[in-house]
Length: 350
Ligand code: PEP
Ligand code: MN
Image (tube, rainbow, N blue to C red; front, side, top):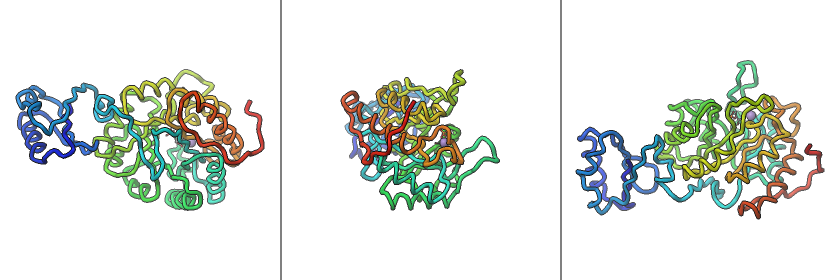
């Protein structure tokens, strides 16, 4: 049960109700999420009736939500959440594309990619400085030096930065450089990490775990919202399926499902979702047609030399072609698109 107060509700009204609920044995806490003060209560809700909340002027709405995600639910907030990243909006009218290498490898690689993806219409630069690799012997990332390069690339191009934070110890460090903190699929249920990013005021990109149900994913988002950080962007990146020809099974049906269940913006990662550059363009088009608010795409100037995920990375030329094709969906999804400002030599996409 959620008790939503008027924005100007007197503190004593809120505290009185909180105390009464807790005294009566209901677990009740105040959430800092949402612009209106909110009390979230579970357990003994009979007491709510006795409190005659409907007679208290500052109580705006009582929402009965019996799901494990409450603040993330559309029942709680009807209007779409638009996450602001500086002047950019994710979940607004415009489709936003985040693009860049899987991992930051060097100054040259990053700056070259940043300039190319910007010219192709991306508004955000992706790139991991801390990499969650399956093998301990694989390239683990450049760590803080990688973050510094990302910040330099931002100064150079104006692109906003999205990069992964892997553990609670490095949240402050990553937040110092990044515009959006990415929680990777492997960490979707790292509850301490979710709590930690719930305490910061920067947007969080929450990837769906490879084995996570939609409810588990939204409940993970709830951790961040319950901490007071309303700026959560969901990212569908594929789940483990039975198909041996793609790395994961990109669950595009999750897009309209999540749009119905929550008010949060949702983007799609067709690079990890398919694991092959060849399938990235068709699945990007399908993701936007399905209602996604944006995409996160791996692009590398020389995919064959990439230290991580080269096989699923687009060349700049293929990325440029993808951006041009995406914009043809304008009249179908009634969204705005940024088109490429350059024309790289055309390539065979088959
Ligand atoms: C990534 O974005 O490079 C990444 C590791 O993604 P995921 O957590 O979805 O595997
Ligand atoms: Mn990757």
